[in-house]
Length: 195
Image (cartoon, rainbow, N blue to C red; front, top):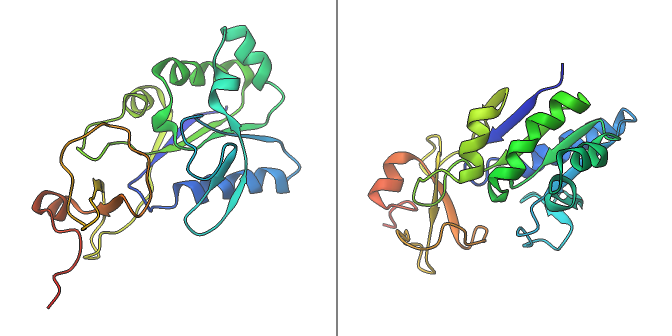
């Protein structure tokens, strides 16, 4: 029986690399994955997903496949063996609401990758919804500069100081965000002390 998966983690935990490897594994077996991202996520190009380690591939937009009536969505997705969604935190609640229906009606797995929380540790609405409806939830691990597990996404300014206010969505990479353990997120220490 197919399942709805939610794989989340702090920035830098290889969510996108994992999504790309899963797509490759399906293709290597002669199967057809549908790889998607929200239209809003345009850092690496319009229809490209790219990992920090350099893996990349073309993808489609979530909106082109998941928006519309349920019958339209099921028809557009039925030819695929798996749906993989990167940056799922930027999806709408309505888009998340249709994922388990695709799994159940078309009997194909849907595997979602994204951030659980924003830079203020507030859950993204789509991530919160996924936590409620996903069959399987897995945390992908990464580490803080201190070597402990990093679970917090800290937004930083040009000097490396933590930013504690602003819009929930502000696209950026290593220049704007750093993954920290809870201790260093709350203390504000984004790197080792320079001596």
